[in-house]
Structure formats: C-alpha cells, structure tokens
Image 1 (tube, helix red, strand yellow):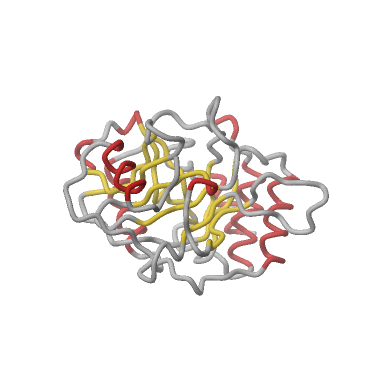
Image 2 (cartoon, rainbow, N blue to C red):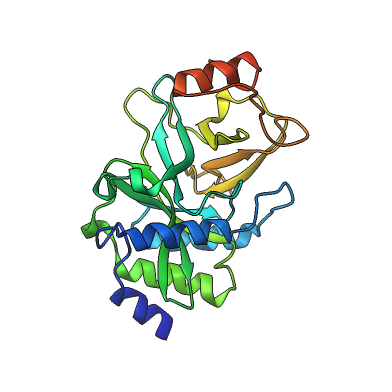
Length: 255
C-alpha cells in the first residue's frame, strides 16, 4: 500500500504539472532502457482482462489504456520520441526529436512507465499539441490501483499507462498498426491501410464489444513487413508526404 499512497502525492509530469527539461532527459534514458520490440513478445490474456477491468471500474475507458512496454531503435541523448500528425493520410509519425527544439508547453505525454524505485510515472513518448486528458481527468484512485497491480504482479516492465487519443472527425476509429521505418522512426496508421504478414498486439483495449470474450487490441506492431520487420528507404525524406509516398511505392501501405 505504501507505493500506492506515495504515487498520489507525486504529480504526473505533463498531466498534473508542467514538463521540465529534466523530464525530457529522464524520458530519453527511460526509453533507451526499454526492451526492443520483437516478434516473441506475448502477454497473458488474463492480465490484460484484469487491467481492462481496472480501467472500466474507475470510469477511465476512453481516457486511459495500456501499452506493451517496448522501444524501437535507440535515440540520441538529446532527443525524445515525439508523435505528430501525418496530415496527408490518417495516422501519426513518431520520431526522435531534438529536446532543444521543443516547446514544452506545446507537447504532452502519451505513454508513461511506472518506475517503482521512484514511485513515479515517467513519460517516455510524447505527442504534439495539448493532452486530450486534463489534470482534473486524472483519477488518483485509478492510478493507485493500476500502478499497484503492475507492482504486485511484476508487470512494470511489461505494461505502461497510455493516454487515449480519440480518432479525429472523419478518420477511421479502428485498430492501428505501427510500421518501423529505418532511420525515420515509426508510422502509426489504421491497420486496414497496412500490408503486413502478421501483427503483434501492443495496446489495449480496442473498441469493446459485449459479444467478445477477450478485450481486442487497439494497437498492433506490423511485425512482418519483411523478414527484417523494418522498411528501408535509401533516399532523403523530409516532409510526411514524402514518407507516405515512399511507403505506398514500396507496397507497405495502401491509400
């Protein structure tokens, strides 16, 4: 119970207090210390069900979800992973971004890892713009139970707390797929747009249906785009449109 009591007294960076440069540097170290995503990462469905039940019991569905703890390529020490809208198609581009270039008031935490030694939720991925969650939306009892469950079941290195980003008007509200693009971060798109052989679930819950026995994933990783699990682009890419055009040309996505 001590861990749960302490966490309520420590404001969550970016949700209950403003970000600092120290938060950014801690984020980089946290991200680089995560296990690299791999095809063999599978989790116990009973744990997923229990975490979904915790979210639902506290009325947090549509506000918070949870994320399979992983990283992609290491990022430089003066950068963080920042997600921005692709613009040209429904989806996001998540890439290493210089800390010095950031307006800390113009970004928000997207995924938070609980660090038991600090009794703290630490953001390790960010997104542009204001958070869809306000400080008043943060239910301390939910945070206590969620993080306490992770600690008690040795799951702090398996699951992270994630902020739900509702689909924008006119965009499909469906499970997404994350595609790794060598040297250019990752692209997150509606799963129906991605040509991949297999998908590894990485986020829960998706859209819950009463008839389903198991909570569906809301996010996946396109784990077999090819045998390397990556897309390689051997030319400069600047704007999001150039990246999307190349992914279409290679047959990775369909528009």
